Image (cartoon, rainbow over all chains, first blue to last red; front, side):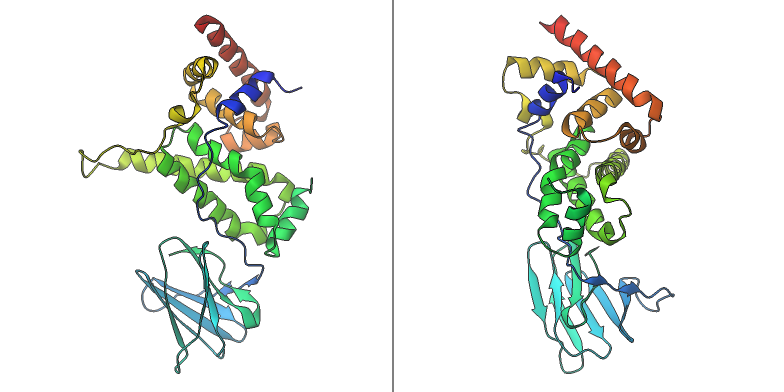
Length: 119
Length: 176
């Protein structure tokens, strides 16, 4: 049986509510596998297996740049607050501005996501 | 009420399960950094990091029914990491104004009984404060989960909780 003093403690902190922080919501897509090998170049680079190719991402402050082997459709850059569809340019590069905090990149046409990481 | 397994499956699918998880456990997650007496801003960081960790691990979670313990452990680790980093940091600007955001005391002290309960609670040792606050917010946690999260021996959770409540009652009686 629960001690009533515990209910009083719970009530005591009833007004101390958690802030509305941007908590990332799962995408429902399958996570991409991270390329498990030494990466040449800056350590800010993230590399994932995507189908038979790879996706390379690089973060330079608020700028996210990426390229995806063999996929020409749009990617989605997600934050807890927003989802943005980003189309690659003629050479296959896509670019987006991100705010510091949780970010994930999704490839809807393949049903894949990088899962959340912190920009 | 849906089981955690059902809610986690729904969250993995990107549907409403995530909101249900946040609603179910937001108070528990928030209570951990606050029980470490972290400021509002630091507690908010721990809170967000804990949910981020869950979002990252959701597809790999082995036992959804043990999620409360997992969240408790994660928030505890994050809170300790913040405390350690605060201990090492030297303030750059000592004239920086104090945060205007409410401290735990500011938000709980409504009436005389609440004031006496708060005063009695904060004079307990830190382990007691943490244990009682977590027990108050998450009655469904098993002793094994609490022991795991707080680094206690399984056999000492029940007796410690009883001792803490007895000590709290004694302090409340003296303050009357």
